[in-house]
Length: 462
Image (cartoon, rainbow, N blue to C red; front, side, top):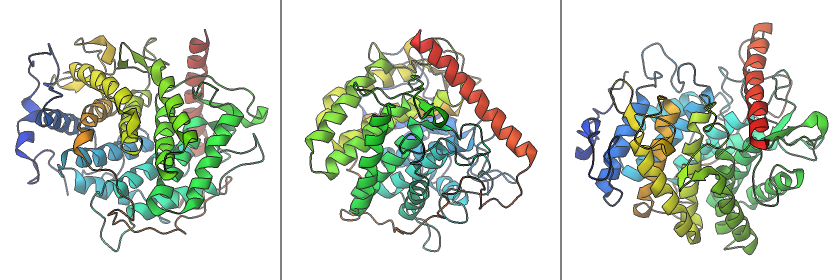
């Protein structure tokens, strides 16, 4: 079945003309028309952004694989994109993309319903799996329509991811933590990074609140404390990229990306809520939020590690989506941060809209929101997703608090979910033997990322 984007019967009236809504508004000189005081204007802009983002998706085409984005996008970004569309339904109640989201999320769940799918296990990292798990968690929390009863459920999928990752906790090196890569043959297996551990922390905190099971909260505490003790987070709550197990994590790479404080901020806000306003978690929330100032220039979000030098890659283009997503989501769990968060997201949203004036249709978004109405010449899934998340975030006051199983949640869980894939030398779920070509390909891709990381770290330190 091929989805005709933007033509679903559930498409609201304000969305029908959105693809034409690129003319100048009274306060804008280019880009999307956006009036942040008008929810319908925000929804119309979000509809335009979602539509153009989904023009890149081919998983619903005959002969293609549901849940995958085409090259150059890696598997994890498809999971992140589905997370943005789950947010889109939450904020706008537009169900246009719900069927394709459900199809992709279930298709990629894998035989043990833990996002260890055979077509990815040869190159899959803990952070990759974590993004899919967090998308499933959002579906449970935001009451995205449940899958058919004979299919895996959102909560159980999130639990499957968490259980797998808990079984990979590595105390042999650096006194704990998750490695970046899952399998020994992948370059980066000897690297422990903030985003992999941040995804695990984030998921543990949210599972604790949703289910009431304190074991998840204990894991969240353990992970946050380890991140701090090993030096991936400093005393000023700046999160650094990672460090190598071969040096017992003494070589902290001080590159800073937007998604790292974002993933920890939401987890901390959820833990604050779970602990009924713990002063410790309040302190941590304020510390993390204050440290995000490195990612804002004149109140506009930017990717400090690569935007100034023009070295952002396909992955990096999407990172601001996650800081936007998690900053605004934190408000529902820790309302005292609203006065700090919303002005930043409002200013960023206005400037993101200005960048959505490029490409062959004069609607595609660039990355450099600080550039004003001068489109920066880039476009892609990451740029569309980033603009979508920061703009729809301005509807946060109009949506309900995410649910738990005690406050209206309907998603069914499974505390024993997952394949227990804690092993690191052999992807047991892979249906095909691993060849030298597979190993070389995975090594090359990860090496390129490491080269980029090292180069970026040198620039930031300088």
